[in-house]
Length: 358
Image 1 (cartoon, one colour):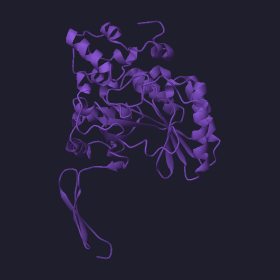
Image 2: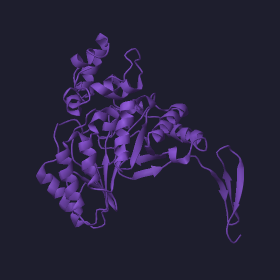
Image 3: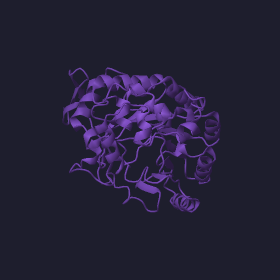
Image 4: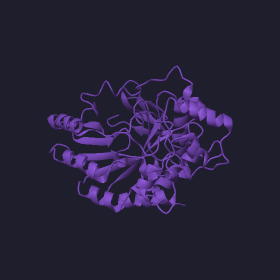
């Protein structure tokens, strides 16, 4: 192991971005090399040495490998693919701001990530250029937020905001904190999963100055719940920052109840609250990851009542075209009228609840 292994800047600067580099850590057949090169013509690759170290080189279906190593399937279009599946461009009043919900906005501050997930919903832009938001664009975005007093919650995302320097990130947060009506600042990041050494005392000490800060991260499989990841999550929570997790339902990776149960219980043990389970979006080149919606409903039904409620995320479809997150789930209300509601519990037993005044 390199003596700078635990230095996040070394991890970032030594990301695996080419087939030649990947061959040094994974055995690749000639066909696999050709397929990856073909895929890189459309979508870039970047894998931190840390995340690559989690891959079982003998398992072609390793869940970490499937999330990070390009597949030829990404080059085979699906008729349902959309360039901008969530309609973010239509909801962008100024560059870098997505204003879909009345009281909150998404602020996209970078196109860079430490690891380019093969299932990325924003792959049309993320990873295409190694750049962060310019000061002029940032000031324009902040001016929009300042002018709209209904905005009380800003989610900083990208790309991954934690790939930026701590000083740059602080500059952005400080600007948001200078706006009286912005009550909550959130950060969306995958670095606790793919580059946990980025969670330094310098970073958490900075974030503590701007509370309330909330962070959501993105664990998809129990194999990602390493000791290093646990330490990173503990540092965030110990800094007084609530930490949630958003999982994407991925075919062949976590689309069964036992895998999902192990992931969710592992997360709460690490003091990470499962927040959303997303149906995989309609982004170009990721159709092979999408499951039928019934699979997600069945997984959630199989877990409800068998693990604690705080360990259960909300299963949602982020509606294509910008409709926002729509909860999807098993129907526990069998019937209802003016007299009573007939319910089914997690074991399938029926119960009746009388309506008030009936």
